[in-house]
Every structure is written in structure tokens, then in C-alpha cells.
Image (cartoon, rainbow, N blue to C red; front, side, top):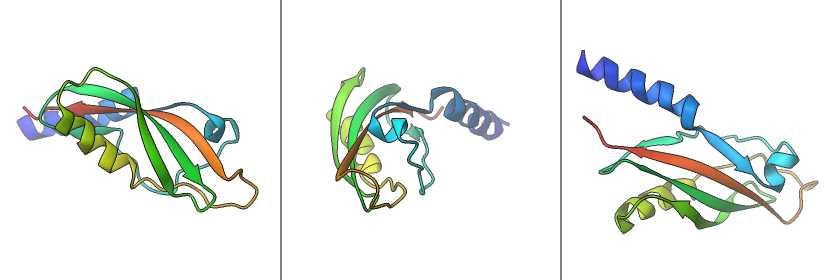
Length: 110
């Protein structure tokens, strides 16, 4: 029962906390091609906003921490490592680098 509640909470949280907040990538409606879990399991509860730079191949080339309530460096690094693996739609019609601000949430398992 506890496991079902945890998965339900994560599923609901994924849709309530998932966000691509702003940036040229959002303005030009560039699509994600990888599955993105905006809610990650971590050692602490918290959130972080990262500004991502995406090249024409759809690869995230850099991630800069914009805002967070996380105190642990290890939690910030865990999220940064995750966002660097995100893939977007390829295209030569896009500029050399697109930017987007995305918000991710960490939840501590119960």
C-alpha cells in the first residue's frame, strides 16, 4: 500500500511540478525526444531551476543553476548530471544554441 501511495504521489507531482519555464527553445516550440522525469528521487526534498543550452543536434551542452532551495551540493550535482542527458529535437533551422529554463524537483522516499 505504501509503495502504491509513493508512486501515485510521484506521478501526480510529475505533472504538477514539471515545467519548462521560459527560453527561446520554448518560444520556438522545440520538442523533447527523451523521456524526462521532472521529479527525481533524492536524499532531500527540494527543487532547482537550470538554464540549459541546447545545440542544433539536440544535445544539452551546458547547464547553469539559476535558482534553488537545495543546500546539499550532492543534490545539485545529481540534478545537473540528469539534465545533461536530456535530448531535444534536431534541426538545422534552429540557432546554434537554444536556451531553456527548466525546473526539477527532488523528493525523499518515505
